[in-house]
Length: 273
Image 1 (cartoon, rainbow, N blue to C red):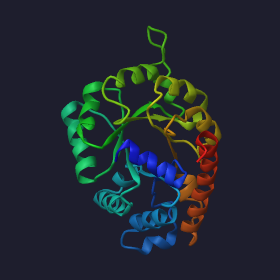
Image 2 (cartoon, rainbow, N blue to C red):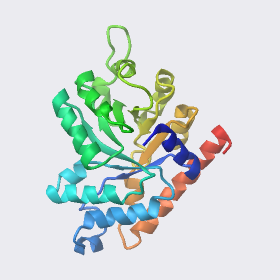
Image 3 (cartoon, rainbow, N blue to C red):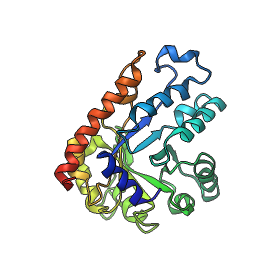
Image 4 (cartoon, one colour):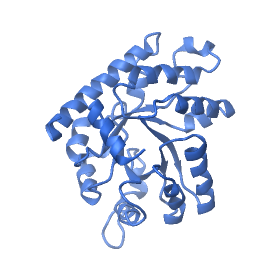
């Protein structure tokens, strides 16, 4: 999917919402467990309920890997079911030596047909480059994440007085263009988003942490938008587990619509559309 196609979806739906498909067999409504594939059935109903209000879906791959081969099958069916005009993100956090990364890239881009994948940059350029060799596919590089442990390394100061996450941004901009790479910037560090936007004015940011993790959508939007919105804001548990009853899909739809309406207000203030 191209940058323009993503932006057109944002304008059309007046939304920059990503729904995280962190589907846990222990949390989905119990009545679904009688289905042959309860994970896919849950995802299918969530997608049907929320597709009008979001521009992306982000399965967290760990939830599928954890149940073995059946999980990969559920994941494939889920990706095949998502409408083709909605951006798909493999939240896999891969990153390894070049030949291994090349195989990860084939798995997620050629076989599963994701539009993008989250990648850890710790091993450097040669661990990221293989993911950048696929046409209209995206790397979403971990830069400043929303977890508490992000303080351990991401904010270490280098000899030049910069934070390590800033060095990642500077270095990675030499590897490719903003048409191939996004950055993960956590919503729970909204105070840093404006500074990161100044370092990467043209890139899209994937922003997790809104919803159950407590990130503030208004703060993220005010600090992070660029000329093409430049934000894909993820909410997972607050939407997909809005109810654990028969009405779970309706509850998810209402929660997604509530977020979309707030996003519409932010877009109208910024762009008047």
